[in-house]
Image 1 (cartoon, one colour):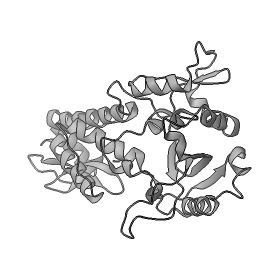
Image 2 (cartoon, rainbow, N blue to C red):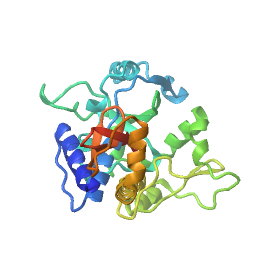
Image 3 (cartoon, one colour):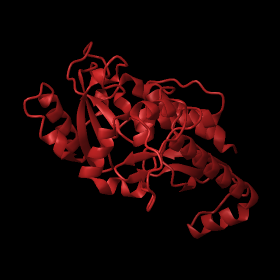
Length: 298
């Protein structure tokens, strides 16, 4: 019984289904990189679309209007949004600083592809900034892609304070869980300073007006990876390790649970870790095909 080996196999199979390979030295690194990919991707849940007043007021005659409306419809109907993401979204080692720091996705407003079989739409002149919830999506703003170019006077795009100001003005409740109540800003970094600190792997609190917020995306680690991804990987590994120890040290307790479920356990328990589409990771006793979930979905 080795749940970490089982988990390794589960992740590699999921990565294969996504058409990607992951280089790793241990299961923690493998898991963290897989979580990084899943964080960047958007699932196909139907979502109610909300526009910021800033975006709503300027879109009508813009060249990206028709693509924007297509994306809105896809969100509402639960269609696949991922082709509008960056090609970097499927690269395990590529970090999205804007997403890791502020929890904001960016979508390319393009409906053309380099080739019909291409997985992603082509890079576009405009990017749609969004916050994605389980059943809603907030369209914050559309920004020129050129603002990601260091030679552009509005660079750097990925730390534009206007994005946080739009969230606060239109959906302040989204920020409330991250607010440091009663704390006033001690220092507000310039956008250039924020970008440099983020790139160096330092957590920078967000200052909007007279309020201070922790990073909505969890922030970045000193390794310049998403901190929330690392912490989630830690929690998953701790959970499966605890489950394995409990089975090993308390077999009679596990057998008692099985009997209460109407299952006659074998003398020797043989458990493996499996992934179930509905329940996520589950511990399964292979002799009688009985198991229980760990409340973790990958």
